[in-house]
Length: 512
Image (cartoon, rainbow, N blue to C red; front, side, top):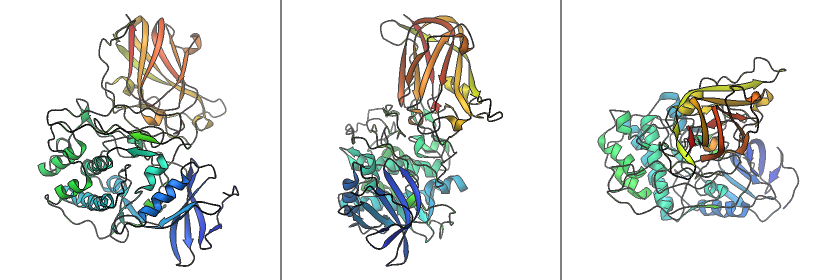
């Protein structure tokens, strides 16, 4: 395969002229292009010579091209026999479900049911033909400017991320339930790095049902969400897109608007989906059999690599594995090439730490009296403070898994070159010998190197011998060799590859 530079003006197959680079990450580049033979705009994805799954993506695209449901984004061409592998698909213009919610708030229940039922029917037809999505988010469902529903990313997104599962039908049914939850409540019940919507609240370790957040949600629609997501108390789970589609035909549905508003940026089919450097494919564990007596939980935390990771949070047995170096994910950024300044957290899925954890040498949980955000602005950039570090510091100890101490969104790992680092200082009620510190970290924060200082001085400059490491998504356990102190300072000289540092609940334990 050629290693020549691909640039605007390049023609593929003698007909697809690349016009504008929309996104590039992990060796996969998305372009707006013109099909010069048919005189129409198309989306073209090209691959770096060393991209490990180019042939698989092309194969998946060819399979998708045989699907006839008009609600599935069309694939026009795919080839890997020449110097450059590429996939050519429909250029879709319109509003994603996420954009509709962000602009106008949650949808009316009847309209939400109608929107998601279109996606369920389209996905059911794809499953009949042997194809699945595996990576559904509120950004994959589009209401087009032409007044039609489009589901994007079928087959290709999963291969790009290296996602497989033993039960694709059940995973896609879960994704449909999540989209319906978002449409009804305006919250995303999954990995928040997947969405700019606020993270769905949780009650006793699982997502709060829609009807408890919004009183006008019909009980029948609420039940469909709970069954598809397998929330606690739900019987007869919906385990295939066909079952979700059939259930939605039994509830009142109202028409969607005549057409979606025109967008100023690239259309949903070419949303910039950042991806990590190519890695080995990962397999999602098969879900366990449904049981009417079991209690659904928030998902187990994924394990992320220090890459451009984002995580997808799923319920109970449907624990995600990395599509983007974490859980089942297709991490999604803004359409603008400069990135997305909106929050992109992925809530940790761990339950609250027990007061007296088991394990040799580890004592009870120590009370944290205060949490303060810290930052060191470079002298040459006065006034460039990060305005999120201080206000969000208290969230690192608020007892909630869905809130985060965080920074602003940066386009790099060096805080825009404005800061020498950021941190948070935890003040314990009393000085004590510390045996362990645990941190719940969303996939957005994975890959950030840290220094952990402990002592009786409030200034880290007065402390020495910090413990160093790198955050991973999920539960981070930092062993402390019995150091005594009242202050625990977590310091980050650099941010994560995602550009937005986030740390969830912190817990400090004494020695046993």
